[in-house]
Image 1 (cartoon, rainbow, N blue to C red):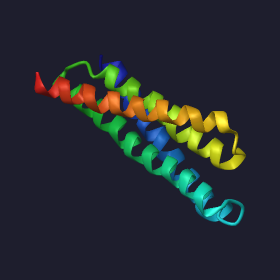
Image 2 (image 1 turned 180 degrees about the vertical axis):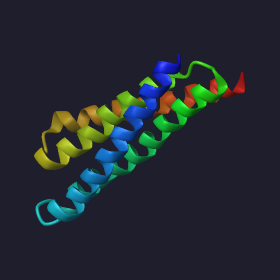
Image 3 (image 1 turned 120 degrees about the horizontal axis):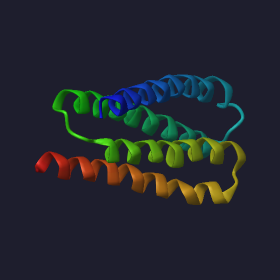
Length: 123
């Protein structure tokens, strides 16, 4: 369980690092190339990646401190970042409709992660 906790902290750090870089790229490299609506979609992806990168750090730290398995929550957040944030980036740059249709699955993954955390804490 300890090894998984460190992996979640690692992945949270990686996704936060990428969020900074992708946010800067969006602000400085894409602002003249995308419409305001597409840029907003891109920025939403960055925002949610930040939130859930921090959430992964938190899950890893809580798992280490409380000695309880929070892996399922972390996996929901990881899936959410990939399905939601990364598809926001790809859709905003390519406008391929199928990518926009995948984004809600990432949102559901985020909700499942937070809901699972609520249930775990309530026990």
